[in-house]
Length: 112
Length: 110
Image (cartoon, rainbow over all chains, first blue to last red; front, side):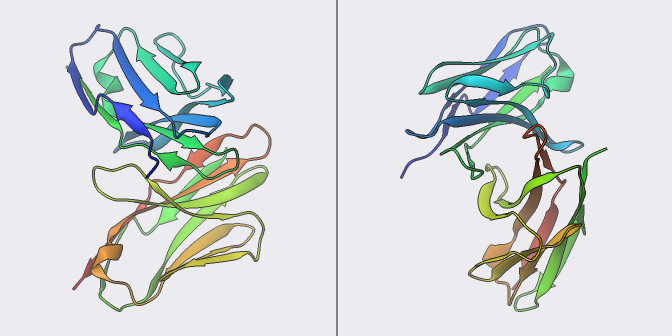
């Protein structure tokens, strides 16, 4: 049963620390998306990639967030330095090239 | 400004009581509209994609419809296991951007 995996599932850190979240997309999928979900804002698209190339990262705060795909099996989202307002659940999703997306279980981030 | 609005925010139904969830959108150029189901503590699960007004998709007790201004998710004779948050999202033509609504929390009472 192919699934998107995300690590870590939970992360508690202090303000100012670097946070790295990892995502393994479903094998064969060529699109990868990063989302952030909060109670106030709901689900927001941060960035997405097609064939490992970044297509849009306009949803990300550029000064502290960065997203990369070092290879086809790994996508990373980094926050440096982290701030309390970054506390949220971060989801990765992958897709086979159309509009369908398969979401991972999320990383719950708490920044103290 | 591109917007997606879902209503109601929350809905409680008795088992077997059919109803509809609404997703209204104001966007400049719709590429597609999507429905997802999200259970607590999990990622959204894809349900449907609709591309043009008049299109309908069905899956078990769910049917999604699309007009030029809104989409409905009809739930027929729901069961307690249909309880979840249902999310609507649109994808824009001009820049491929995806915008999600805030969701409708559906609770089906046995």
